[in-house]
Length: 347
Image (tube, rainbow, N blue to C red):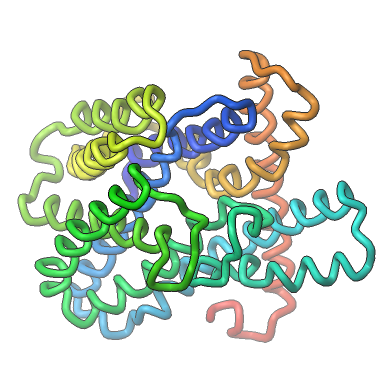
């Protein structure tokens, strides 16, 4: 379900998250981490829409939770592995690793390499070699179970599990942290704030999909303005003013409304969303997200003082570098597929 308005905001929120991390490195605080909520909610929306469409077409039985998750996993894994290896090489060279250090560090980070670290195999805030992968790990884990449960009872899941999880998880996170919650505190699979955050956010996305389908809003009324307004204020302007506060939940509600309204609006044909530029730029957003923190420390060392030129250079660097890595990883994947036994590349 491609929607150019959501593609546009996908690009925007990817950069918002990168600037959140850059600002943190310079001691400037914002709540732009809330951009992750946008991606969780959109992921939940798209998951539910795909599952319900397959169900309506009588094809759901052949599309298992494993198949759904594997489709997602094979899309992200090559880019995650590449960004990990670059970060691993930089860290090893900078710290002067010996042979044993390289081996020990690599084995220690195997859960991160395979994107299962948020299932309880994470070991604190300094564990991840490339910390942005936490979102992908949560999205894959939570997505698997949402698909599994919805496939075996979509109505019960939508009517009971979705609202119950939202009403239980968000108050728990608020009482525990005072804001939307940390993502690195992983005690085990159940007591995991990142997994809980992903469950609540993705279930919001599921409900957004249900609302859009049930009330048949698509194409009937122009919702673009509502969507843009909610996402602008809930995801960018207001989070800029407040850092790690209970307003995070207001921001999340606004993002939820913005996503639902965005998928409800008519197909937008104005230049802002038209043409192939938005589609092509949106394609490299996973690479931008995965690459941006790899060079952050080196970037800050090179430019100790933050100014407008730093922001501009940062934008250009991570964009150009990510275009290159997206192309390079794609070529590597093509070469690997050519050398796989017949049929394996379709698994």
